[in-house]
Length: 88
Image 1 (cartoon, rainbow, N blue to C red):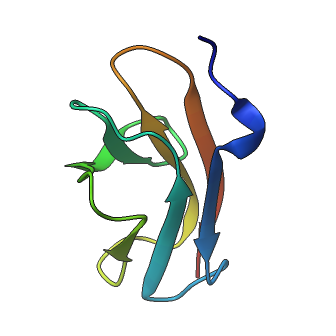
Image 2 (cartoon, one colour):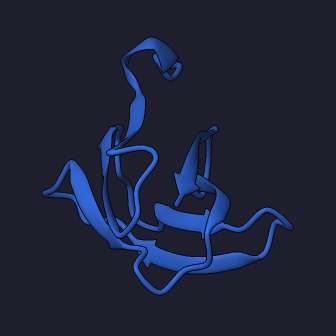
């Protein structure tokens, strides 16, 4: 059975943000599903395993430098979802 990409959603709000942002996701979070935040150079600055029983996570970006970041959700098998985030 294939993955229905149309039903998988990743969004970040508010965007841009100066301190906190909520990542909303609607995906099948199997074991090993990770949320990563990467800086403009592609360096991972935050990583967390996603839980089965949630569809959102709050990111505290208050100590991060201003700039562009990529929020990425990846699973052991399957596609990655990415979303651009601006930190003011």
